[in-house]
Structures are given as structure tokens and as C-alpha cells.
Image (cartoon, rainbow, N blue to C red):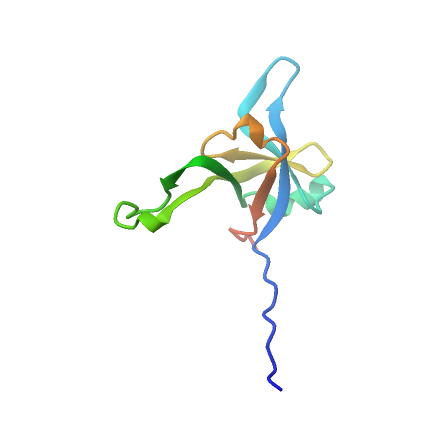
Length: 123
């Protein structure tokens, strides 16, 4: 009988949800998104995630070259797109954080999944 070694499950990101944009009664500021991270319920728990990278992944209707040398390698064409961002600070006292992305997230990202990666490390 051959033993198979099970690889350890290494988690690179913590799932989260985009709640919306930072806003007041009269204005909405689309350059700052509000994220709820799974397992984070207090303001003190958000300190670990400040400065971490976050990623919004979505599908687009047309295929596009997403990496360098795409014209030489047509197999790199993909419908998958991504927008990178960074957690900037806590928002309120219920574990919600603010994040800024390279491009503002679209409105249809509200309620969708966000990946909050566990790097860069501050330990």
C-alpha cells in the first residue's frame, strides 16, 4: 500500500465582502471602499489587517492580454480581471475597514467577494 502525503492547507488570503463606499448624508466618496473581513468583529482585530493588500477579481465579457508578452503568447488571453488595493484604516467599531484600490471599484462590486491577502507582514 502506497502512502500519500497530504499537503498542508496553506491560506494566503482571508475572504471579505465589499459593503459600499465611504459616504456621508450628502456625498459618496468612491475612492475609498468599505470592506467586511470574515472573522473580524471589533476595531482591535482590524489592526492586523491595516497595510495588507486586497484584491477584487471579476470576469469581463471580452478576452484581453493580462500579462506581458501577450502578443507573442495568445494562450495568455483571459476574461479574468483584477484590481489591487490596500487596507488603509479601520472604519467604526464593528470590524469594518477602509481600503483604497488602484482604480475605484465599480458599483456592481458591492456585496461581492474581496480577497484580503496576509502580506506584507508586520510581524
